[in-house]
Image (cartoon, rainbow, N blue to C red):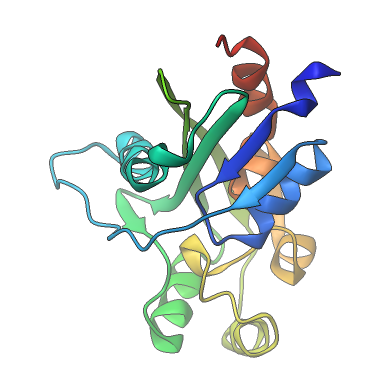
Length: 192
């Protein structure tokens, strides 16, 4: 399929995002730049991840060439209006997971797709219900899975997702950090 001949430049250090794109059959090259993950406090929770994805695309745009797309992404976790990014410490991760325990929260993933001529961005939302997590389970998870590079201090694809998620409404890949079904449609429609 010609679509899969497109080279993807992924502006992300996330091995999960790279794996999702490769599993979808794309040729992926990773280039990532350190971009501060700050945003205007006037943004709504459903705008933050997309704002950050577009911001992360800026230093990568010079890499975009014909038959090459730059893709950047960012995810946030939201619980009752409180936005959680990556934890800043073990204690922060413990507090985040304690807050999420037994509750429904949202994962917003923003994606930016660009080439040398144009840019498209979007956000996808998923709802997740965690079962109760006791302190021993949280310590076990943090010590064995070290989710300190993940928004909300967890990875849906590992122990917590297997044992402590009661339900999800949305796509699994969105919760992992890249909403592949929607992204695939954007790439498919891309015009050069």
